[in-house]
Image (tube, rainbow, N blue to C red; front, side):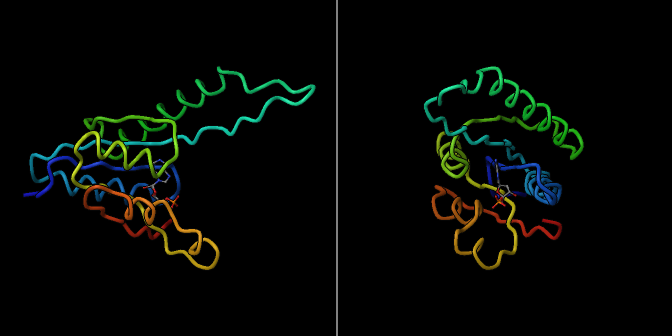
Length: 146
Ligand code: AMP
């Protein structure tokens, strides 16, 4: 039986996402744990409009949100996770995942992890950032295809 009560799966739509989904599914399959899924959209950095340029229309953000919601639902259907509670949030990826985990009393975050080299490694990764800020356990799933 799974020792976790509330598992949070953080997904992007990059190659390898299926492995992360499957691991989250395995973690919740045996027991009575609840699964939530989050995708975060980073906000556009808005500078004051320059002459001749209009600011980004509000509809653009709405379209992006809708498109992300559709993609997430399709992914969850494909991965057999249609029953999971899911959300698409706008914010800084690391802090939004960690904040959601804290608010929703998540006790395990499942996240993908790439093997990184050079500059990417120095700058860190989402998994690394979440691991160091999370209020709970974090399972970093090594992505072969990522
Ligand atoms: P990255 O370090 O950006 O390559 O991402 C590693 C993992 O962090 C992904 O496999 C996801 O589990 C998670 N992640 C990255 N971007 C997002 C996002 N926008 N929303 C939710 N989770 C994300």
